[in-house]
Length: 276
Ligand SMILES: [Zn+2]
Image (cartoon, rainbow, N blue to C red; front, top):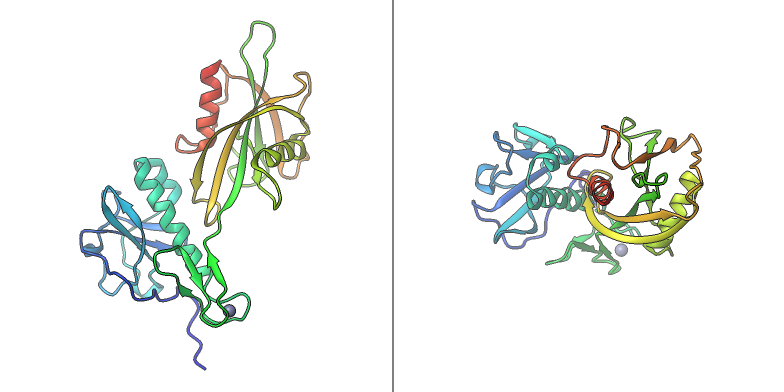
């Protein structure tokens, strides 16, 4: 039996891209951009690249591939975080989807039940085992974010709870966040995370919006909530391991070190601040 080298599985034969289609090359969590910072076209990239479809943008088909070290073109490779900060929303989302699909294919090469090599399912972001028929879709990991508020002192603005993490972007004042566990609703996860991380009990929990997030691994979907502290006099307590600080800020005096403008964390903070 021949064992193929580890890495990206070869795409199954399907429709092939046209030279003017968008071509997103992904290496790890970095994407190849054009010299002006945009996304390249398939015709500008090496022939023979193993493209897989990742959707369309304004009617233009988009394809992704993961070149190996030997065939990786030189050029401007940039993280999704850098692209998301600069590119307009549809392009940043497409780049995030390309990273998620490429990462999924690289990490779902073999059947977890019988060890045969999985095959792409045409028309889906999914793989299937030809030996035992196991179906393996790209699974999303939902995570929740909570913008916790309480009334300010009499006549003063609302206060927002911001936290500092022990790892990751430690310089930022961020929101309480965490992954949803099996068997939880999004709202249950919000209440559990807030209790676990800062020891507060919540009053209202209102859905705000969501954002696909390509930084913390393939297929993370962030869901944001605006929530109120049940007891306005309660002070947060952090465990010092995951979080190192938690503080109430008046919404008209928020710190400068906030999450980036392209993140739902920031959209939540800005929305709470705009309400005053
Ligand atoms: Zn199998």
